[in-house]
Length: 237
Ligand code: CUA
Image (cartoon, rainbow, N blue to C red; front, side, top):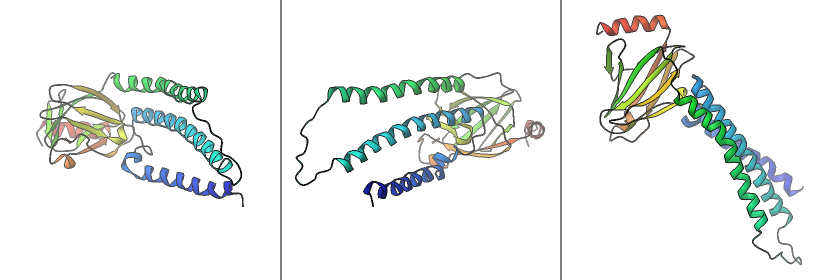
């Protein structure tokens, strides 16, 4: 059997394993079910980056395999003795640089999309504390803490994110949102969740001993349910 053929299934199996492990991990799971336009955009950008890097990975590994298999030491064949090839080095520096430039276009577009807050239906304030989240709905006069955030489905929510003490980070993977909560500074994010449900997140900035328990739960409900909920909250229930 040709030795080149023998390694191909093993290589493909290894690549498959790496991909499966990534998708099964929390860091990869959001790729499977983004629920906001921002998360979808971030996912598309991620796939573009993966496509470019996968192309170069396969190209580079392919050249490496060919070099290893075809030009390995053989008895009686003197090895080639040369090093440094300015033209080759220029080419393999210029191509990745070009790939970065190509990817920067979509990256800046996505960043601008995330950072441009559209006209919002609901405004909230997210305040990090050691070690819980406080949520405020200034337009309704509702403030509470240590409870799930509740928002209406299909509505644009603009959130001002800040902290009362140290740096936290409000991270809800399915929303494509991960924003630092800095004391003395207000950061802005927006999201429009397309499906009702309960979404989990967690503080993503080491903020002290209970950092690992600073969970985030967001209940996305129908607008009617949201109205009922906000009425109850206004009464202090
Ligand atoms: Cu708050 Cu980590």
